[in-house]
Image (cartoon, rainbow, N blue to C red; front, side, top):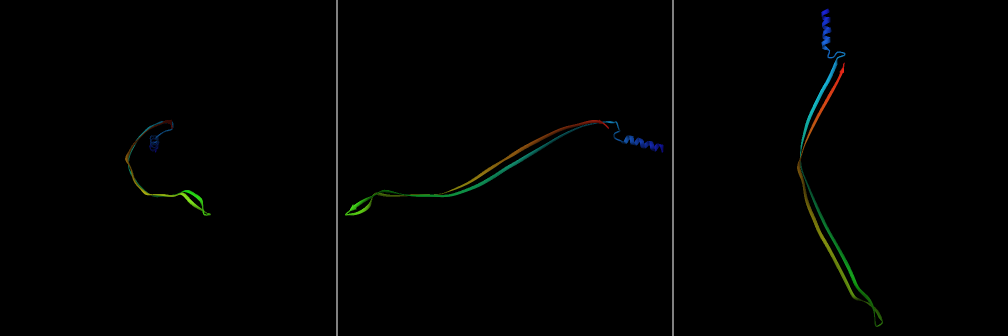
Amino acid sequence: MKKVFGLAILATLFGSPALAGETFVLNQWTIQQSRTETNLNIDNVTNSTRTQDYNSSSNKIYIDGKVETESNNGKVGEFFKNFTVQNAGSELNGSFHEEMTARVWGTINTIMNSYTTSHESSAGIR
């Protein structure tokens, strides 16, 4: 029985990772690296169409001259002297048609590298 009891005490002493009053040190380095590559291909086409119809017209009447009074055998009458009537007009009709195509194309290449280094250390007594 004494042997079994002695083996149990020895197993306890060797099996425990840290004993009271024991010192410990942690010294840990972490190094990380990452790389991201992106290739973005762009091909964009925009089509637009515009149609416009228009018309415009104008008309002008211009009257020039004098009205004069004349008496003839006791009768009074009016007559026009140098009388002119001018009539002018214009008209504009038309249409406009436009078609446009715009294209943007190309490649955007990006590379992103990331590096991280960290260090942790601690020490103490358990």
